[in-house]
Image (cartoon, rainbow, N blue to C red; front, side):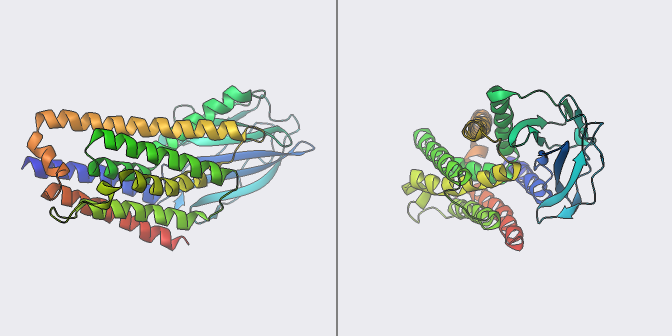
Length: 337
């Protein structure tokens, strides 16, 4: 009975992120103000979709900017985007930018703005802080802080990446081997993230996202392989499997980062801080899973054995759950081609 309860809890834990990912409710919104010269700024405002409609947030630009209200949205296949030009006779430095409705969501807004043509600065608005006053140029510290926080936010809201890491934890019970596999995954997605950011690898986002879903389906298939059929591929070559799929997941991180944009003149620093944020968020997730697993192992060892030992009903059930979720993602992402 306890095993069934645990499986129900785990299923709820895994299915809920799938629903959130389907709605894109945790994707960051993006606001860009590009200085066109002559007191004019090009405004790009992009919000996630929630159940087929734009997320219920809006943007308020500095008071001197006209027109201050955004035109109607256009759907771009993943979110809703609108572009228009505003006139700000007093400039935007010292002006206030706010996102009404953000406090009722679970997403962030990255604001990228130019105080002079070609020189970009960044800031991040959160549900707890949906307003900021445009400061003078922040310099490297501001870029580091903003993109680090964005990296943490992206990985902790990236349910597909977390589900992959969770499946990897289930497949590799040996701690030393697990550390090596996670390190290989980290090195790989850091390399592909950098390569894609600098334009050395150029791939469209929908196929990359679909293959990421396939990588999770592969680990799910490994989970429900019965005992007595020899070592699974992940058990024989844990570091190689983690490294190979890490390259794919890095391209997924790069797609998100390219949608957000990088500050001109600070691309290496922004890339480094974003990647450090991703790693920090990933380590927090791994530490959480291992801590909860250790506590449950002491309290309910038979229950944990049912979901961690190969061939047990709980392990196979988790394989089907993870495979089902990633299969839904795969089909949805194919539709986005």
